[in-house]
Image (cartoon, rainbow, N blue to C red; front, side, top):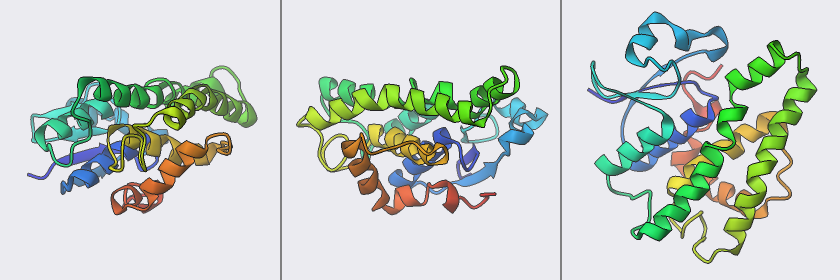
Length: 215
């Protein structure tokens, strides 16, 4: 069977996995969930993925991989070309540090369930939710911009002139920033890499607006 990606069209974690599958040239089917309607907490989906989070990659009736970075690691190990990571341990660590700054420091505190909680349970209004989102993006983007702008390993993409592991998270987060009107002018290097990604069909096809079930 084709892999099945259980995802939400606007989820940044889903965006990075869709782009990864596209870059690897892997054909896959999709099942979509409306997170605001808690479809990802259905009994059927929880039976597949007890974490109840998207994305999840279903390989067969019994095998499901949860967590976007775990999925991307799996894809890179099973489908080694094109490689997402450099060859040397030090360069791989540098690329991972970029990716983790975005996927682990920004996304977990700016995802829908957190934003919903501070709005519903803590009484934050829309302007305060936006300010929260923008604050935590800035906390990570400033250091990532500095790392990328000063390091000779950066090329057209985060590492050299081929998109890889860090670009997947960068692309997804910058895409998600649009909804919260994040000012990207302080981050010219990040902007340039994002534009380089947008020149590739693998990334364009992963955009929320190009998802087959976008609503």
